[in-house]
Image 1 (cartoon, one colour):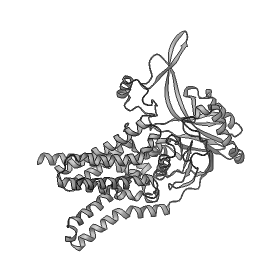
Image 2 (tube, one colour):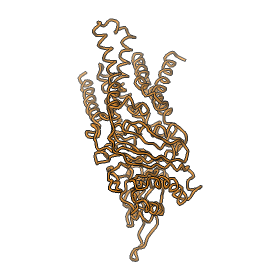
Image 3 (cartoon, helix red, strand yellow):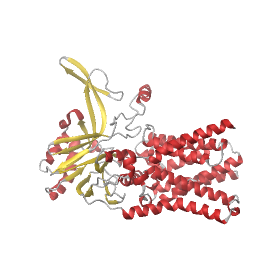
Image 4 (spheres, helix red, strand yellow):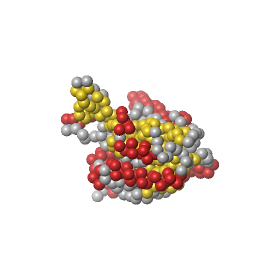
Length: 543
């Protein structure tokens, strides 16, 4: 084996380890600050040798990073895991290849500015308008389990972390190359000191700022009591081993002892995502599950309950109301037979002793299992292949809050469903609309006892920092938890155990800089990316 190939293998494996460990091992977020150096070094060596077909090397690096970090998706869908890993790595590799093209045709620092701006612009696309998107591995999420380093996310959001990762990697890479090629020793002492100081500021400055912000931050003392049941049903066999009625009874058995002890105190109760599948949004009270829970709350008028439901809109008309709607039988109205159309929803309902007071439909849907992207393109293609290959859920256009009202206590809460907890700017929209706390309902049992559910709960910690909102998180199993406004998990349940939590969250009406002004880092990066692209094109034509 040639020396160059051996070296490339070592560098690929080094990057894979350094970029994967922050998502897999607690306290390793700092590794991402040097995790891209092997990739940059491999590219520089290849450029100096004039190596051909180098694309496959950096694609391999991104492929291994994705595979090692999110292989657990295969626990729910092998095809989905393969697609997510291959497609996500390919997009990363294409951005890096674009950087290499710009670097060959321009020079100086412009290609590296282009690389950073293009990367973060792509991450912003993932987090906003992208339908074929998997934003789990954006670089700023590397600190999901080292939140003490990124308390400044309340100003920048997670893409500020992506910018930090790139800056530090480029600073370390630049110093290393300068020393290796003999340029650094020839610099004047003042220049050496300036270079080292700049690198240290880029590395340590955000850490110091985070420590200061974290030490000075104080939550408002405005508690509300929350009960979180973890029923622990196997999602693959829940309807084979238990009927929906038995599951509802089991949930009520977990909740009622808490309510009996709390007596007249205003209480919020959460249930997991998609706890029931018998909700028709046009006639919610016809649901046996809703009726059973509302009856249980009649003795507790001070309680509001958030119910997770696989719900459906029912529409009776001749034509399909939506490209993702499906026919569900027929109904005769005034002697005329009409098709009955269903539209699938992943919903959260607010219930009290009088009935349903509000409903929210999940908007940031999981590609494949819930979402058919660009349906005008993919639905006809899917029909040619036999149909029913992808999920057909329909989400809301904009997030909306659910309203808690009991015993004179009123406030809005953000009903975040599962995958939505990784979308920071989307979460900020709830807060701008008045949410004083965040309720995350999820079902993490699909992946088994893997890093998946641990990564998922830790990603919610970043949303807590960005919005400075307490989070109550209810999972069917996995991790149900209370997370404070500094992103710290204060209480949690074990994996795969029927359990419950009772505690308080502090309501807050304050808005962070990130909530008020949104993702400035991402927007500026898009602008800089466009400028760099135009500059590269102009330089090319001038030459």
